[in-house]
Length: 261
Image (cartoon, rainbow, N blue to C red; front, side):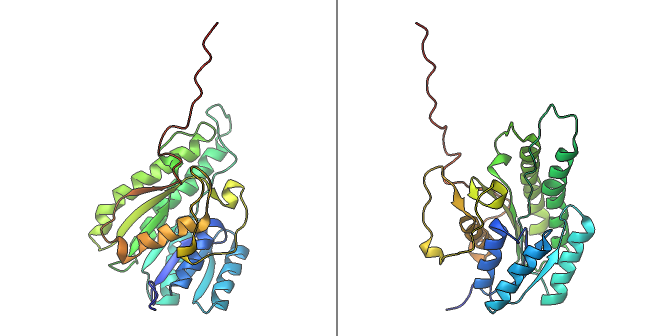
């Protein structure tokens, strides 16, 4: 049975844990050569070694996605190691400690924007310089990018902006034969959401449907990323695609106010 990404090279950022880690494993399962990129280099090296133990080609690199030179180096290292670049899953993100409109200190706001929005811009730009025609970029957004988030407006603003970057990049990338799409996950059981570290991945056909508006697993989003990066999604471009288990499908039930007596 042929593997969908056999002979292809892929960058996955935020690949030391959560969605990125699941995607790195699944890209490798499908034959890809994987650059495992993360600020947590120890975690990235652990993932890369696990992929190599499974027979895949992989290497780890330390990347702060908010830094231009780190993005450029990540891409250059991938091209040098694998002879080219065919796909990128720009998944790294940061929720932060939460922000408020009333905070005197804007340090947390600046860091969230730097990673989630500036990092998205720098990642797309770096990848665009090297990715082969026929390739694809997938970016991890959030349902926070289509709804407000009063407890962390910086995060919501960064994810709204990310959608704008993806849509804006679609036409110039298409001129180079490259597609780009964003995935907007809802609640996913990852360390970013204070969830568990999941190290077991299943054949895609064995994935279970989560409860309505419940939490999904990292692999649910990883499988979507693989689809969007594949030729099967050739007609899908410039989109922001919700994957949230029905979270934003309708208003949640609201109890009516008690009528005054």
